[in-house]
Image 1 (cartoon, rainbow, N blue to C red):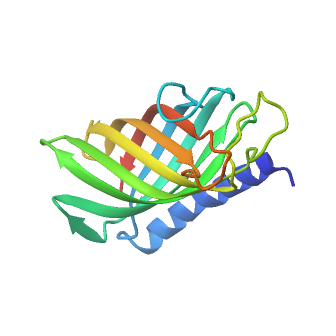
Image 2: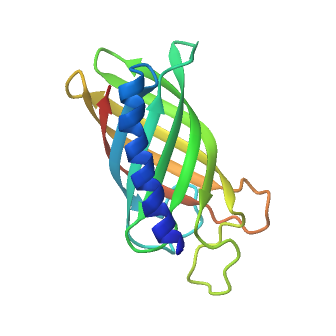
Length: 181
């Protein structure tokens, strides 16, 4: 099965597992987020723009399991599928989220991503990520629109952190809508 088809199958399984898990326990998942992200954005941490398209992002955030310095630590799993057939990724993070004022929030995370892109491409027009498994660093700032819905700006970076001589990294940037359970 092609990598793109595998991601689509995973996405369908991923989204169906949320509805069945939600029916079993109201405490397991805290939020589901959907977004559109500009793919391989220049000007942040990645070396150069080599890939195209928009990423469709879906992320499930589990209920908090710890408090740290006024914020909550929450596990999250997600997928970003590239519309152009370039690099897509699956990731799992630990998020540190905290509220700002009455309606706004911010968060940062650290996790691991696996991708279907190139690790050491022979052609210079392709992104060279150096490793199949990469560090995933997400940042998010947003506000609640209602008690259940939120709108946020989202940025993430994937990289092998210099553990391989090939390390171009990749950044995405966009908007997400959140639905709180």
